[in-house]
Image (cartoon, rainbow, N blue to C red; front, side):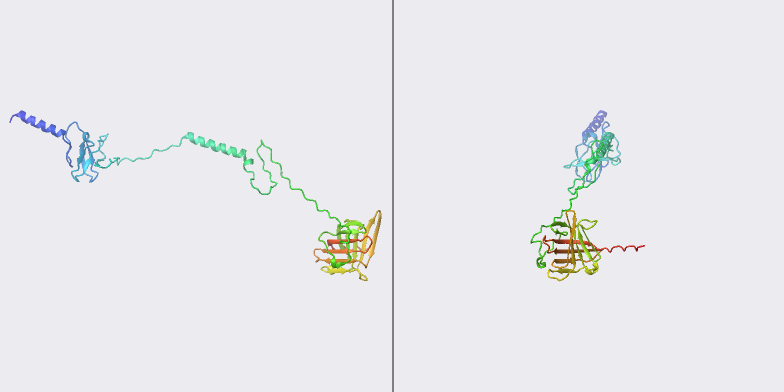
Length: 328
């Protein structure tokens, strides 16, 4: 044959092969000197295939598993250290990440400005807490007030100190008036009140201020020192306080002779007294003797025209007097 015919045939075959798709096979290569090749793997069986970059995105058939595979786009770099993967037709493309590269999250650096701002806020809060600590830590409860005072800042005066409530004065004992209700010579209807001894002595009001038992005599008096100017003395003939403790003594008006009762009062500037040993009504209820104290209750009515009487409670001092030193 003619030499020109052979040249024409060879050129035709070469051009036809350059326009055709890449061969699908393990050793099939795309021809063309100006086309770049890249490798990709079948996503089903892993078969490696070669394809020209101009045919990226086209559908091919895997020569091993015969699945329809969409060829991936050619990589931007010619570095063939990793094999990209194609996509099975009908599935979303697989994101190809190089296996020899480690992806690390970007390091977050806390801005220095933010750190300074946080520090300023903390310092400001601490300063405010120190300045206003007097108001912040005040007691907000509803309990009883205390005498504790919390000092405030230098710009504010300290709150006033809470004063304790004033002590209430002792109730004033008033002698009950002389009447047929209080002055009765019948002990059966007598009632002894639970208040300190009070009454009347020869028309004058009497309120007991001191009571003591010494040498067998019970003394109820006004005033605490000096001679007895207003009061009543009942003599038990030298009996001891231990013998009278816990005893109840009743003396009726018809008794022939009983304990001597002496009344003392002051009539102007003149001191007066009256002693009787019968015709009076007396009830004495002594309690137990303890710590040199002899408690008791008394109801006494005497037959004088002024209707003298005493009634109430007492707590007599029963200490034994100190013996007098012998005369030199």
